[in-house]
Image (cartoon, rainbow, N blue to C red):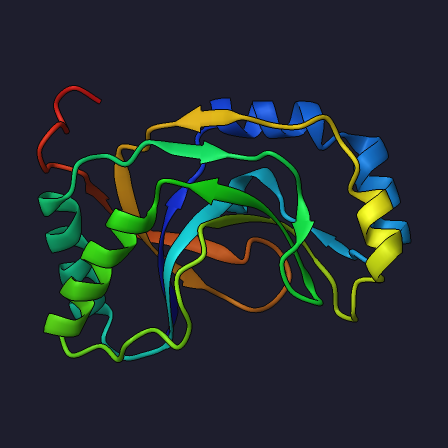
Length: 184
C-alpha cells in the first residue's frame, strides 16, 4: 500500500483557494502544460510521504503518537502558486515544520526509513505528465496573492491509489492533542 501522512484541507480553505484559482487560472495553467488540477477532495499538505509499505499499522501508530504530542500548527497558505518542480505546481505553506519533525521522530521510532529530502511545506494544486513550461507557467499561474490562515485539527494517514476516480483515501484521522490543542 502506498501511504503518506498529511493534513487534508477543510471546505473553508478549499473555498478560498477556489475563489483565487478560478477557471481562468486553470485554463492558463493547462495551456502551460499543467494537465491535472488537484480536486478539492484531494487537497492536502503532505507532512511525510512514506511510499509503498506493508507497515500501515506502524505508520498509523506513529501518526497517532505525533498528533497526540503536538499542538495544532498555525498554517499560512500563500502567497503565490509556483512550479515547485518541473512537474508540480504548488502553493507554499508556512507553519508545518514542527508537526513534520514530530512525525519524522515518531516514524523513526517505528522503524520507518528517514525522508529522502528536506521538508518543504506546500499544497500541490496541479501536476503535469511532462515538464511545465517555465516562462509560460509563470505567466499562467498569475493570480491574486493569497494569505489563507488555517489551524488544522488532525493528521491523516492517506492511501494513494493509482487509477481512475479518487486517488486518495483517508485511512485514519489523528487529532492534535498536545499543548494548546483545546484552544484550537
